[in-house]
Image 1 (cartoon, protein in one colour):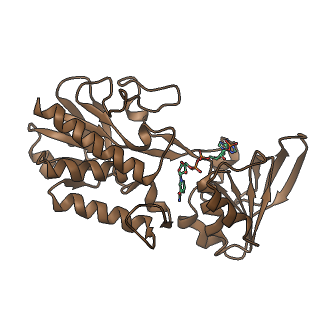
Image 2: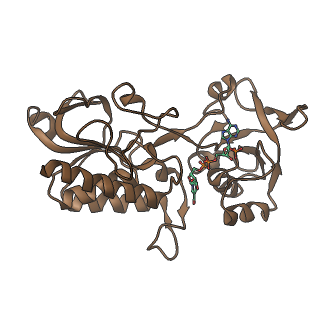
Image 3: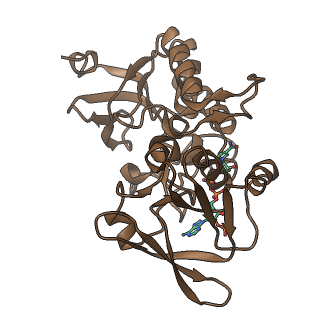
Amino acid sequence: MSDVMSSNEKVHNLVIVGSGPAGYTAAIYAARAQLEPIIYEGSVTAGGALMNTTEVENFPGFTDGVMGPDLMDSMRKQAARFGAQLITDDIVEMDLKSPIKVLKDGSDNVIRAKAVILATGSAYKEIGLENEKRLSGRGVSWCATCDGFFFRDQTIAVVGGGDSAMEEASFLTKFASKVVLIHRRSEFRASKIMVERVLANPKIEVLWNTEVTDVLGEAKVEALQLRDTVTGSESKRDFTGLFVAIGHIPRSELIVGQIDLDNEGYVKAEGRSTRTNLSGVFACGDLVDHTYRQAITAAGSGCQAALDAEKFLSH
Ligand code: NAP
């Protein structure tokens, strides 16, 4: 029987759901404030999106950069050091409307708490093609660091024009013989430094004004159907892999109908705070952030959420 189960009727101060930079930072602050937080890290997603990245060059304090998983591991240990209770499981149900919040985890434990911080982050966005789903894991991937190794000496495509696509394309040149970066417009939205790195890489070819309209292949990816977004002309080109890096969607599916979301599914926070429309429920990180979506801004908003929760609990 787990600690949480044995304290079934106990009302905890604070449960944090999600464990990227936002969740772990909230846990560090809440634990230091002696709120004895429980943090649900997720069963397969513990550590969040940074677990799938390589080097993070722009997190302040690391002169020579830091690997995403190492950064998350340090934050995790820092939270544990101050007494946060880390649980590697998912929250599968939440009732957040009553003064005492009731959550159920993936092992059927029921947890009650006076306050909840939501830090569930975001999930990879899909292009939305039927064959993209069908061939997922058979040449279609959303994670170069996870799957790049399988594409040694092959010609692969990366879709997207943001920092993620630049990062994936650059990383994949370690393995692939050629990476073709497919973008639907004629300019990237990624940061200048990352674009310059991509354009200077002889293994990367850019296909501007192009979208993927189908993924072809029976048992695995063999080719992509492409459409020129300016002329509308269609073409087919052979690839053995497709990496989709077109952004993320907020992981708010568990709280739909309970909490105010905007029309893209992000949790609405009051002004510059992390307060939601529900008393005692706070939200931070990519779940609320349309705009910045950096590891450092997520960590900053996790800190704010813990301070907001602490203030709420002290009243
Ligand atoms: P993003 O900045 O939202 O870029 C998404 C890209 O995908 C855009 O270029 C967009 O095209 C394209 N796109 C969206 N939907 C599409 C569709 N259905 N079909 C084809 N293309 C589509 O997302 P991101 O690159 O994942 O970055 C998210 C945030 O994380 C950003 O703030 C970024 O700075 C940050 N990030 C930082 C780093 C780093 O600093 N090391 C690394 C990764 C991510 P349009 O341009 O035409 O809209």
